[in-house]
Image (cartoon, rainbow, N blue to C red; front, side, top):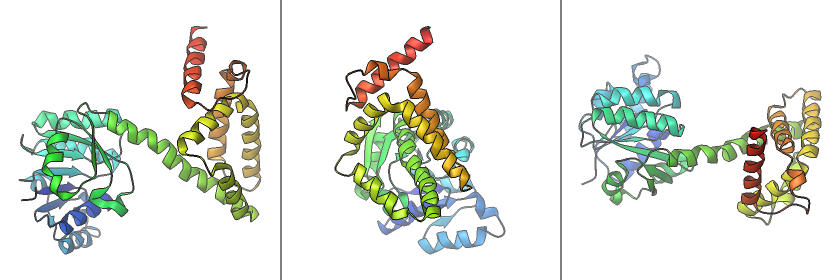
Length: 300
């Protein structure tokens, strides 16, 4: 028999996962969303749940009552207060899974809140788009309830990887990955707005593709960091001019200015004087040189 589920939060993530589990013939699913109490948003959201075969509960206490597994799928800022409220109603045999994209420190605060009520905790870090994969989205797991959760949902074809029982490592992986993934989205926004202004969208995309094609992400990282260690000052100067270009056409150069600052920081470490024989394609070596340069600066 499939375990029963409760979802605190019935937005995009919660509703997609719940709907996917219903398709796997999970019969008992309840949910509570703060918007259920909103006169305008509540009725259509409750109907959405009903159409899926998900019971719309009247409170967090009502939603989690009797559920084997409780998913927290709320906005980031609500993760801790929702956990504190849920902990008041959870029993030791229940599992509470925090599905939210929050920092390792905040995951540990959620874990502490759940521990205060005696339930088991699962730190879940979602590593792909939920809307396309739903409950099969790749997840990294931590927490004292992670292995029990994996055993309970084994028949349901979740895509799970256990990291460690100690909370923090799984969410750290998610947060650091987001620097790249969300950073690229922001770079696309700034780059393509400017390209559109000049009517050179495809020219820019073709040039970037030519520069990056044929390399894995690991190779690209090594090549990029190796050259940045030597050319950071020149690249910072160039990004200053990029910022000026964007200001000339009325675009706030948020990403360009941040990139200039990061390159300037790298240049100030003096790595150009370390790599006198030219760049290396080894990001690990560059990171070690950065660590040593920071330590030297701190000691001076």
